[in-house]
Length: 85
Length: 291
Image 1 (cartoon, each protein chain N blue to C red):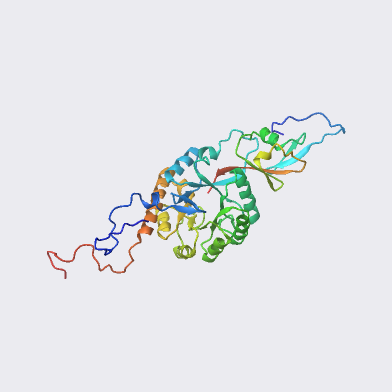
Image 2 (cartoon, chains in turn orange, blue):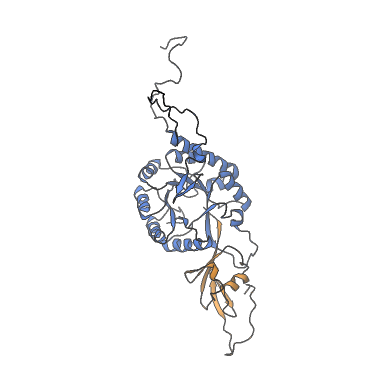
């Protein structure tokens, strides 16, 4: 994992790690816990940039990144505007 | 276009002599391109792909005078290159009307998803360019998927400018679905082959109640002028400018070509005649009489 999020090395109270595995832009990423989208965006170095996120086929409005936590198996698309005709 | 008609004091209207030049040229103010109720002074729309960097993109867009510029929607890098410059820093939405496209989409679903992301990305912006391609080699539009996507997008509140083939029936159907502009190809995307079927374009223009813009295939300035002379409301291009040896100079040429073509269309060209039989100079007073 190279997202910059700190891995949580402590085991959960159940005695095993509850890794959250999601797919971002087609790439598998693992997280130690179910962070909010806002934290994820920050960890990816995208905070303050003009992006749009689709989570499992649904748009997540930019104002609601803090209110949405990622869940195991999520498929995220994070897009920007690029040059094109 | 406002014409000043000469009126004689006795009330007899003379032929429409232009008494004085209009205060402004038509393309500057009096003759805007109106898309979805919004007027634009420039009838040239440009893409932002294939430039060597954002500085060149910006310089070319400025030289073109375009107010509407297309952008593509793509996955961002996820942490690999955090300081990557952003296109929208070079072309801020406060200065240009950004027209997100669906380039690279091969199904209606894909195109709709892409434009919903674009709308979120651009703060609810509804004006979009729909294109659904049929084949990666020709990039020819898939009109069946295009029509399906157009229906969904129009119902969802988008203002759809739609790239399509030069089929007059499909163009009319897209208009009837509620697209705000119909944009037939002149020739294949990126081909620079110019206007291959002016007759079809003319039929599309004649039948349309929404603006018709040639999108794709323009190679050089004369192609753009011809499109406008045919009566197109505007021209959208990318490669013709970006792939020129001097893109900024070509952008300026395209600006003039679109303006010249528009003026020529408004002016109304003289009819074509096999024999002129009508010299421009007087036939009398020749020092040697005509044979």
